Length: 294
Image (cartoon, rainbow, N blue to C red; front, side, top):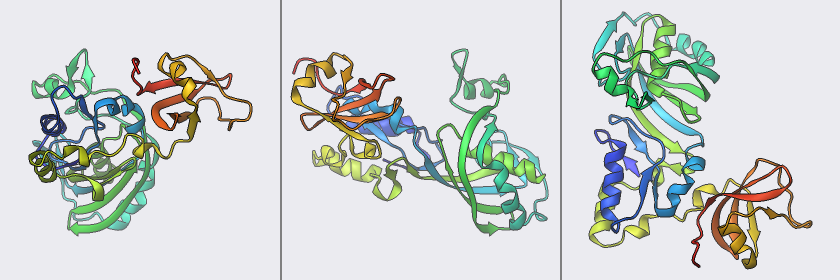
């Protein structure tokens, strides 16, 4: 789905749920802040069992870094807590700094986040003034590029990263490193794994499909975003083994896969879920999509 700014990720999930038959499970893979826009993978039905693999892929963001102003939320929606003159900062200085924020880095999650502490969301504690800083987390930023200078104090950035990276915190930290502070003024998620913004379904398209009773036409097949994973096919007589979670020993002539590798599993040509290769070479199902009574 293409999440518009001003809508929460859960709001979008609710719209999808209302467009589907009652009782169908719906969930999203990777929260976007309310002010952010872009790709929000939404899983429907059995596809919700594939969350772990779908959200563990790289993501691409376009962000507007505004220097000279810090906010308590690290984005444009927050209360200004510090100001500084950023006119002295040049694009060349920013580009020279960016390698420090590439690779595996330690990042302190923002106080206004959905992370839970003692069962309470951090943003709920922050609103009451009782949020203590979280310990830093190890995250991976694959690349950070300065695309353009949009104004005297604003720069358009492209970030490619793994899950768990807060782009607003990245903007905040870059501003701090430059000595003038900063915040994220805008954010668009261009891609999340196999999902790209060019293919995302808009809220308007969803509503149009709902009125035409054609929502299913918008849903991609479950294995489509998993084609980067190796495929293994099992004959139909292995179905009971798969359904019951029994380890499956690979045939001697089958393609060998290293231990720990995740596979797309097919039984009699039908997508059956995800499997993992054990140390002994056997295959164990980790996300099973077949029904027990078939």
